[in-house]
Each structure stands twice: as C-alpha cells, then as structure tokens.
Image (cartoon, rainbow, N blue to C red; front, side, top):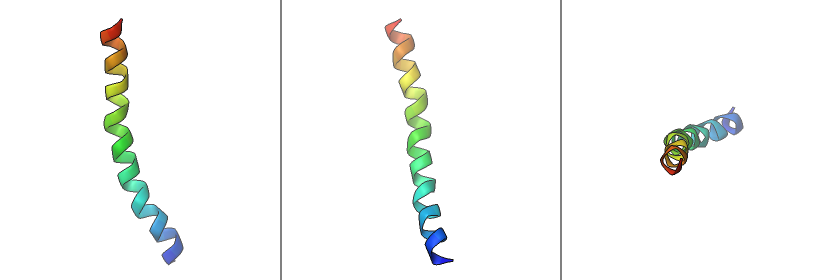
Length: 33
C-alpha cells in the first residue's frame, strides 16, 4: 500500500503546476495574434 501511496502524493503537485501553465500558454498565443 505504501508503493501506490507514494506516486499519488507527487502526482497532486504536478497537476497544480500544469494547470497554471496551461492558461498562460494560450494567453501568449492570443497576444501574439
């Protein structure tokens, strides 16, 4: 049970980093257009 628990913890912070990065990427493209 410890093995599956370890990957779940780091997976949460990874998603958070991607969420804010996603909206910023499209924002730059819109500005360039």
